Length: 158
Length: 122
Image (cartoon, rainbow over the protein chains, first blue to last red):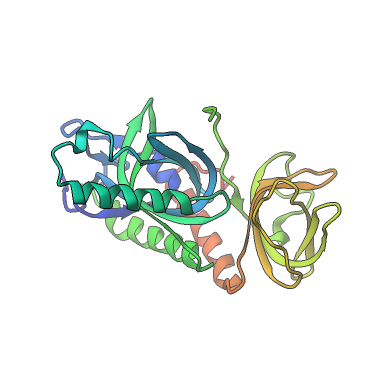
C-alpha cells in the first residue's frame, strides 16, 4: 500500500473526492481507483450552501466537477474531546474556527483543507482550515494542480 | 438544511450555449463567466457578454454582490430557456485570465472523461 500521501493534503477535484473508497485495512484512509491512500484533502470551489448550528457549520463547495460537503466544528469550548487540551490552545482553536466560519458565505470561493471521511455513505471533509480566495485565478490554478497531480502522482498503483 | 443534493455548476463558455449544444437543457446547473454589459436594478436582470455571445442573468436571489457595468462576473445557477437564467451565486472576477480559464476547462473535461463518466464531459 502506498502511504506516501498519508501526511499531505491531496489536491483533488470534488468528483474524485466523492469517488474515494475506504481502505480495507485502515479506516481513516481512502483511495481513488486503487491509487495511493489519502486521509487529508484540499479542495477549492464556490460556497453554494451554508448551514450554521451551535456545534458546527456545514457548507457545500462546488468546483464545477461536483459538490462536496464540508464541516467546520465550532464546539471546541464545550466538547469533551478537548477537555485535556491546554486551555489557551483551545481558546485559539475556537477563535480561529469562528473567524473562518464568519468568512464563509454563499458565493465566495474558498480553499478547504481537512480530513476526508464518509458520513451516511457520502464523502465529506472535516475542515481544519478554510481560507477565502480573493484571487479570481485561484480556482483555475487549483484545477491545473489537480490535473497535474492526478496524472503524475495520485494514480500510481501500489 | 435539507439533505437535497445540490448539482455542481458545470463551467462553460457562453460560446457553448446554443440550442443544439449538450449544455442547452432546461434547469441544468451551469457556471458562466462574462463582462457585465448591462444591469437593471428594477428587474435585477443583468447581461453578461463574452466575445460576441451574451446571456441574461436573473440576480434577484443574490446578496452582497455589487454590480458594476464593465466588470467581469461569474455566476452559478440554472439555465432557463424562458424567461431568464437564475443565478444562485455570483462574484466579481475582475482580473481573471479568460484565455487560461477556457483552456483549463478543456483540460479539465478531458481529464474527467479519461478518468470515467463525468457530467462535464457528457
